[in-house]
Length: 266
Image (cartoon, rainbow, N blue to C red; front, side):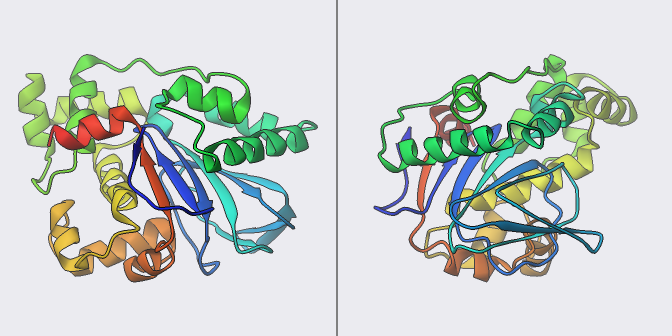
């Protein structure tokens, strides 16, 4: 597991299909991330708002693309995220039901124990199955994608400023653009355009604790300009890019070997 951070209780472990984050949540503004979020309070409670309905608890789950705002009594909170295309349909919903059920406190303690483990840096390289075991006590079912879609997903997930278009992916798959787009959504449950937009915004996480020129970063991860970059990040994370970087100065970032491999392949 590559360490891209510094000594801190605030940390983020990034794999291609999962993220474990412990740090600041920022102001409770509306956000619509493309992944499932499992929020756990380090101390006190968390406060969720969806469609003007307010909920407070020690563990809160939001589904992919569910618009919400989240706040914490304590300055540090935990967020575990799951990429929906990595699991068969229904798995996230079933997990959310379990996490919200009678064993909620048990799952919260499990995730807090994972945080303690990561703070001590006792976890080496980690697979998706190992990540799930660490956080949930079991490996979640994996979605097996068509190899042509797998190649397109890998291309999108690379750290490259080069545009990844449906036409390019379709040509590589030996399909027409319309057939490829249909296949992609059929396999992942997400439209190609929405998937690409979310993954591009997710690239930001890898650089969150660095002192970078944001205009250059926007181009490096595939945005045409700073305006598109700022709009996309605010949509998915509820924060301006600058606010994310300011709040991540003491964040220790770890990347799994697979994440590093994807980065180096670009």
